[in-house]
Amino acid sequence: MTKNPLFSTYARANLNFIRGEGAWLTTEDNRRFLDFAAGVAVNSLGHAHPHLVAALKEQADKVWHVSNLYEIPGQQKLAQRLCEATFADKVFFTNSGAESLECAIKTARRYHYANGQPDRYEILTFDGAFHGRTLATIAAGGQEKYLEGFGPKAPGFTSLAEPDIELVKQALSDRADKIAGVLIEPLQGEGGIREISPSFLKALRALCDETGSLLMLDEVQTGVGRTGKLFAYEWAQITPDLMAIAKGIGGGFPFGACLATGDVAEAMIPGTHGSTYGGNPLAMAVGNAVLDIVLEDTFLQKISDNGLLLKQKLAALADSYPDQIDSIRGQGLMLGIKCKQPPADLLAKLRDNGLLCVPAGDNVLRLLPPLTIGQEEIEVAISALNKSLAELQDDLSPEPSAS
Image 1: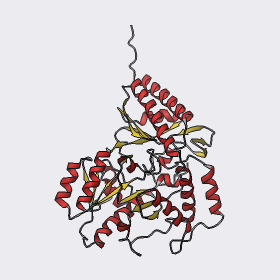
Image 2: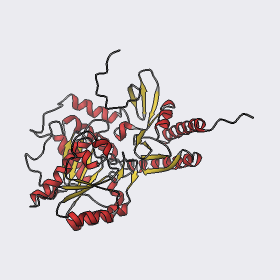
Image 3: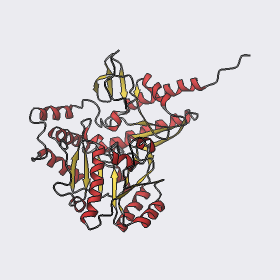
Image 4: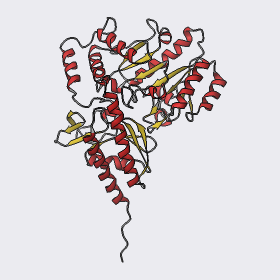
């Protein structure tokens, strides 16, 4: 048997997909699966969306890479569209969510440095957060399972036990002259689809204004329509100073971005940051194509409508299987089934029954379908969930005693 040449960092399912269309994937042995994982919220418009495919093919015939030594027209266009649709004045393009977070962290620190406060470099974060896999972003997330074995935790990050405004007030009171910003996911993904209340985000915005700390949002998973708004911060009717995005903006092509207000971005002068591949012409072509679809008049409303329908049907399943399901979490098409046991067995049953989902922390099974799904796909998913839960219920039921 040939030795696997890959790092053993993934516990991969034994599935090999060779083609996809919409919300469906097909394996090399011709099995079809309904994809409610979407590459962990990446394939925002599903698989092989014709508009994205055409945009990528058209750009591939022109130029792939020139580096940021030169002007890249697609960057100007996409950045302008993102700024017009959000709080931002400036955009820096990256290759991934972690790199977008790295850029946000550096920008927050550099902002205070440029304003005569070089000691303000600490970032407040929250338990259960996930901000990436680099040394800085695992330190920001603060989860021991990601920190173990990689030496001392990178300094400059303090994780608070929960999104409690009194805890934030105390931390800022104790170290106001050291804290550069507060970093939070408006809806925790990897941590278990944990919802952050709009009232907390509003209070956090006010507190940052009061203390001069920057409000930094991680919308890598929640952004680009996933919750039913273009970005999740809109539900709380606030605006951040910095925001990291990725995943859905590329629709499957790897890239991200760091968005900032103008005064914050001004601190990042030539030489302070860079990226060899960030914002390459291929990525920009796809990103602009994604926005063509997501910014259509009715697109976001359909996400909200389908998300509500799916959540209601999941709530009915929770009522039917109280021994297995604790609750239903999330918003839009970023939903979670909080299970009473680790969801590994349910995840395996769902695969057997043709539905792909994503595990998360806190015994949660994530449902992150393409934003383009309709009622037909929702019914198929609910049917697979019902069948899988019923099979698990049978497995859990005690054998009847012999008479």
